[in-house]
Image 1 (cartoon, rainbow over the protein chains, first blue to last red):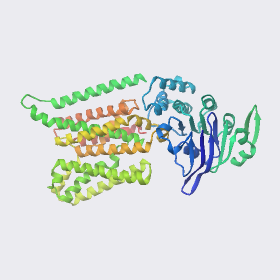
Image 2 (image 1 turned 90 degrees about the horizontal axis):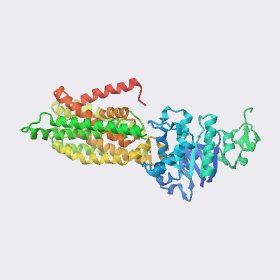
Image 3 (image 1 turned 90 degrees about the vertical axis):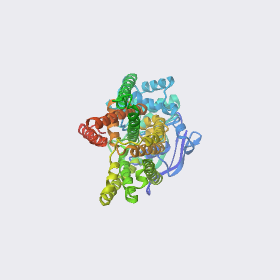
Image 4 (image 1 turned 45 degrees about the vertical axis):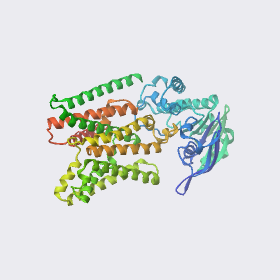
Length: 253
Length: 321
């Protein structure tokens, strides 16, 4: 489990994240939602040690973030940011192999190759594993990066907007994969996501943010309701229950 | 992919054979029973100097491009060449051309190395300590320092005695024609240690291709690695420059050619390949200077000519990204 307590980050005098607390339990998909500039990505970066925080603590498992050795932490926590421009030609398989780096420091053994095969299989990219990433579409490349994170095989997985620029098919496949990671392999999966209906249908927990603060945190039923959604997005919401799934309708506002 | 690894291995073997053949011919050309002692005592340090300089410049440029995540930068952008020339001019201005610091190659070499390494480390120290992490600010500071050094050099060379100026002029161009044997042997150990350092970090450098955030996620500390690599690059470039003079343009050609020839991301392969390629090019260039141009010019003119043309070629093909 990851527990954030009172996290704050400011640039100059403006708070990007202020006094945010949240819980990311194992075996569950937690989505962080909120309008642009709500501090979602910053919160994710602080929780995954990509950015330092100005106040507050991050508890990862039994230890505080600061007490973890970076190399050791990489075997427990993986994070993927949204823009991944790479200045080098890799094949998909080579890219995914990097996920094993924290475990092997670069020397692959048989079981590492099995894990890489499984990760490729999981994301459905086995067939073009020998193609170069610059020859792929945005969606396929995103699948490759997620496969790398899957191959890293960590207890905690953080993804910043994994559905960015993806079509519906790829989005659904990725969300299925993430839910499997949480439910079948008992990982804590945390995603920052803009599509609230994807968040509502695929997450176990939702953290709603606005202007750097966590407004509401809890199960889908607790957070995806008219009052909370209208207060964070500041537009009228109509929320329907369709086959056990809560769907937000906001197009006619 | 097995295939591309095998193809790379074949290319490296061919390059290595090419180097060996070139070195053997360069050393063995026209040797007879009577003259071999004399020729070998001249040629051996020269070949060793070429090999050391080639490897130092090729590998430092390669890893510098990795840590800056940029394919056209070389360490020369930090102003090492300009600083070296400035040091030489300052010695002459302050002490006169007859002083031991200028006339004794050993003293001059050690002093130049220390001043260059010391200055760069000081710059890094303040930089990383005070200003944080972004390497591009460091590069911009380097560019500014470089042009400052070069302006000061220009100013000083204008005002000094023309006779003293001729002393300085030697230092301004790279040359393997009058290499001092002792200096070559002296620089071998530190250069080999730096190269071993690059090899030690090679797998972590591979991970740096993925960018800082991904590298952090994979358990690296990119800031710390960048700092250490910068120190190694500085030591290597300073020694190479003090040994043969300013030849940093070579780095751009060699690294870029290596990337054209080898489709690998592995620094082990790239370090080996670029070293061999650099040795091959420099020895061929030196042979050209000695036999075709009959010592009419120095190799740095040749390097700048070839490097400049190649750079324009890269720009025209729009392959710089």
